[in-house]
Length: 396
Image (cartoon, rainbow, N blue to C red; front, side, top):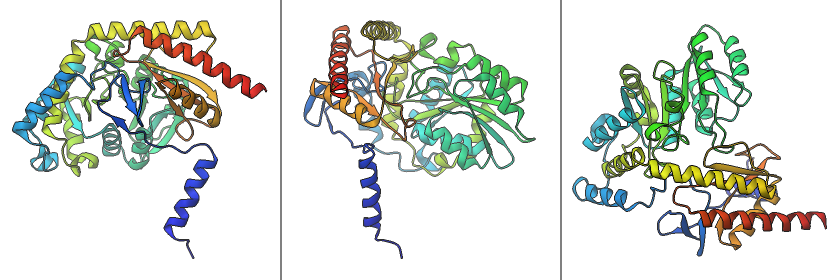
């Protein structure tokens, strides 16, 4: 006989705690800005994906408030019923123009977009070839599709080609993140596009962490690599990172997007995002496209952090993106260093399994255009002190 649900769940939570993998939500008071109040403690936020510093930008809030006064707070239905507002339509047109595609389709979240697109287009008898470190939503979308899944070694285009050779007679989808969320490195997009072409596969790229940061007008890593819709027929990205709002989208050729609209369950059976939120996202898109000054400042901060980390002997990954992980190894050490940084006024997340592989727990440091040089320098000083103290305790 089964234990009570409460007893079963209690055992699961206890096991997570024992493995130093227990995660909890911090309560943020006020805006989600570079400086926040987390659980009552004022600190500099170095674990945000708000790469251009737009999440607390007054212009977005004002646009959302004005739209809310006339459009209300909800869309009241799914997109294919009556939930598709003129603000949604305008946002999709502006997104398509930004990334150089014929059409875009907005989803409520990045997870919904990735799960919906992959499961809408692929089915049993098809093959999905995926990077080993793809985001969980891409992994789940592949599982839900029913297609046979092949996993290639992280960022290894040659191995991706070998996996494509193993595919059967059905449709083939090669899928990757552009910038990987836990390591900050970039996929070999041009090489993957070449292999997709030679194997008759469709390359799908989730540019969530590249959009707004790289490329002309911040159009992303795909645009930076010069890959059009023939080379990358499915381009996905989010609106909750550099754009400073919420939601996600897929962009591609007109007929491709129409096919997704007609069959993506995560879109068809979800209430559409609030129109006022779409209005705020439009403001964020406009500011991101015009945000070269923000990008220049962000790149300077990334270079400053990396130079300082190297000078201090800190174990930084090879990443030119705002994501700068420090691999610390075991869960307890990552947690202890994160807590020590918080005590010094820096919010830096400890990332542990199952998000990353066992033995690779880390601090995931993210830089934004909202940070200043002095804040980056202060973080480096704190990291040096905290890691030195932690090493002394381990050696004692």
